[in-house]
Length: 93
Image (cartoon, rainbow, N blue to C red):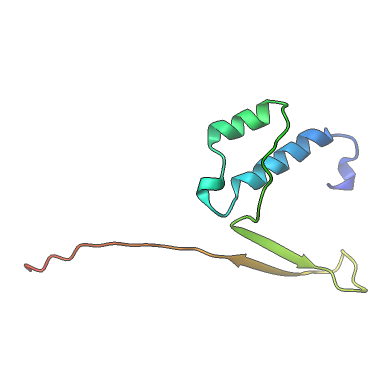
């Protein structure tokens, strides 16, 4: 969290929002919660039992020895997209 926010937020609520957000970007759509599940997870105070796995894409940052966080960091983005198409060909043309 940004240190400038100090005590202006409720830690548990922020953690819950991040947890639910990570569940929403699961790699496989079947593993993602429905919108009604998301609404329920954010509105209710019960414990979230589903752990997020690796998202469909992520940004990786590395800080090398001797660098500070104020320096520009190398950023690598990994993503995978699958597109399927189908078409019919009219052979009577």
